[in-house]
Image 1 (tube, rainbow, N blue to C red):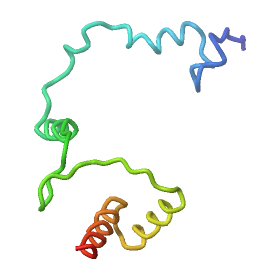
Image 2: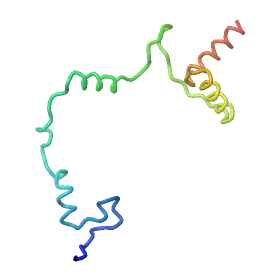
Image 3: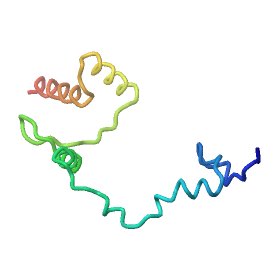
Image 4: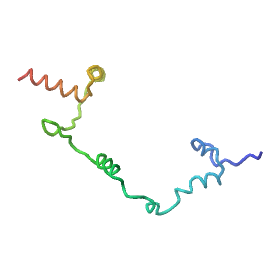
Amino acid sequence: MSKKDVVDPILPGRYGRMSAAELDREVAMFDREFIIDEFKPLTPKMRAQLARAKRKGTKKSAAGHQRRVMLTIDKELLRRADEAAKHRGLTRSALFVQSLEAALRKTG
C-alpha cells in the first residue's frame, strides 16, 4: 500500500487526510456557477417560516406594544432571578415584568 501525499494535515476532520485529487473532487461542487437555476420556488410552509424569521421589532401584547430594554444587574442578583423564574416556570423577562408591576402597585 503506497502512502498518499496529504494536502494539509491541519485541515479539519477527513479533509486533513485527503490527497490533492480527493480534495479537488470533494470541493468541486462549490466551483459551479449559476446554481441558483437549480432552486425551486418556496413552499407555503417555507414562506411562512421565512416570514417569521424576517419579523422584527416589537411584540404585541394585551396591553399594547412591548419594548426591549437593556438593564445592568449584579451577577448574583441575576442568578437569583433566573433561579426564581425557573422555580415559578417563567422566563426571566416575565419575572421582571411581574416584579416591576408588583413594585409599581405598591407605590401607587
